[in-house]
Length: 410
Ligand code: NIG
Ligand code: FE
Image (cartoon, rainbow, N blue to C red; front, side):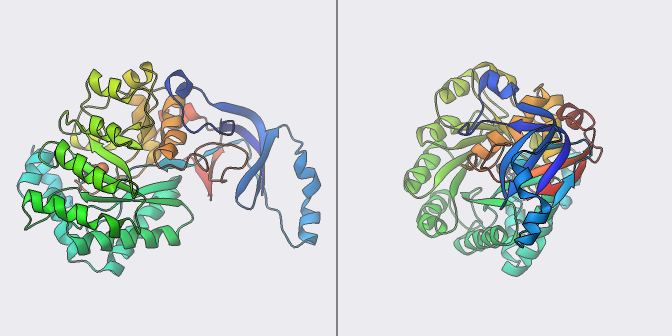
């Protein structure tokens, strides 16, 4: 496939750049009036001007003669960018929680809804009454919608089963989605999302620990909701210790309180610590010099009316940040990464390029796939968005609701 007449080719990075930190997060490689060549699903070359040097040797005629076939797409001045990478979602769930929407509007907090047996437990009841096939059938269209909106790689968590059967059912459904769709899928065991019904706290933590070897047959990562009213630092420490050499941690931390989740995540070499709505300087200090990617989820700040994370302070401290959707029925019923990017700019004061790198390369890093996804780099997967003519990264975030995608290439 050759894409020609590209107005702007953005997100160009040299090989080997796996994440962007500090001032570097504010920069991206851009070529104007460009072309890009794809072979067997990978970016093989790109450049500027009307001429396509290496593509000259693969004229459509030659390829058809060899039965290979070349598709030439005229971008007509559209922008080509890496597709969105969404490193934190709970998109496999049953039913909906629109029944709690009114409670929320009327002023009940996330914690109050959870304390009344609503929230995550509500989704868990529903999930445990839903068959595996039905769960797959309900979840797939959400993933399809995300891909239509430009997401080319996503992480999906378990965490609504809250018992061995339910958690394994979720992990199998995630696995089935992984095998069905062209986007990349990473799977996370989030048994420690809430205390399942009928369990005492300790017994539940033990159940999660006991389930780790079986979960690891499907999952890539382990997650713990380390926050006030859910799991303690001590619980998290035990679960991560038991996951060692089996599952890499990604932690829910500091959404509802300054929880200590960042520090325990860093201690266990978490690939990311996510949420961070409540962050002190101690968390920023703890993250310096680590391989852990701080990840913020502006969609849940928006939906729950929480503070937005201190994104700029992280960058000033020389760290990188990722942004993800947190798509889930309780705190962020939306998987639109373009909206996440816009919120990064509007609410967190990121520049469009900083926000763009947060929803592409850095979010790919937070899934451990940034050697394959998240930038325009020779050899990487051609997981790209071709926009309608005239779009730029700035306009994408500024005019944040106007449809901009002409084609998602996967
Ligand atoms: O990331 N914070 C914990 N988990 C989800 C919410 C899940 C739910 O409410 O269903 C989150 O916000
Ligand atoms: Fe989450």
